[in-house]
Image (cartoon, rainbow, N blue to C red):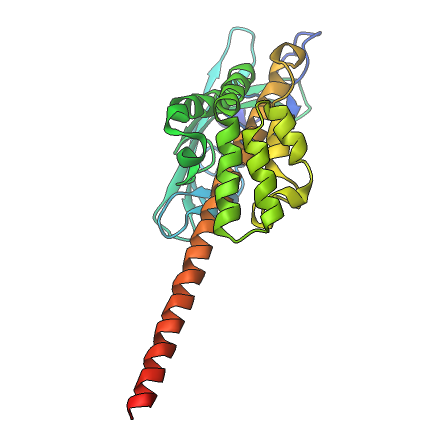
Length: 308
């Protein structure tokens, strides 16, 4: 690669077009869906030494059995290929790989496209065009028990739409999921309440909400944080209320960017609900097993003392 490419000169963008949101390369890799452009400052380097200046470390999810969560990944290598377009601007395609520092076995690969925007500003339009493993949070084991197997394909389609930055499509899929499972969600919360020995008043309120024909009325009944088990609260807030409020607007009232933001929020909330439900049930089972083991041991010690 010609070293002169490290300081490209570029035309001013067409006026009247709204510039992309600003971000850093770290944010682009960690948080931004595929094909969603961002304005990012680039400090060009030598082609053989991290040409675009990718961050030394990023915090992303690792699916390895040793990890199963957000872990630090360290920069390993990158390459870059430049092309000169007819307009005279410079386009750079770069692939970069990272390795998980926790399990030391799993990794991430990203593909980034960079187009220069203005002469001398150092700000360029960057788009993530590839990611492996695919963009998105890990799917909780209990998720399809919560939203139902019939919604599996809707959920996967919503994730694909988010990964491609298709806000309206993703929003529509999540609205459909919630519409299909609105009372099952309340039922799942009721199961957790019963499994964790919630108060009779809380269980009765959840049963009443589950029998309500309109989901909006059920949500109003459960809007107070004391209406659901504390283990399911997110930052002290009721996630069912968050989910309902995030998806209550009609698609025609929102821009594609707003739809994408709300769809991403819905995905986080749905996955977090499933995670917390799994945790609550697992912890309760562990407590019951421990108490049962203690009682058996105590009984055996008592019988041994009686026969001695």
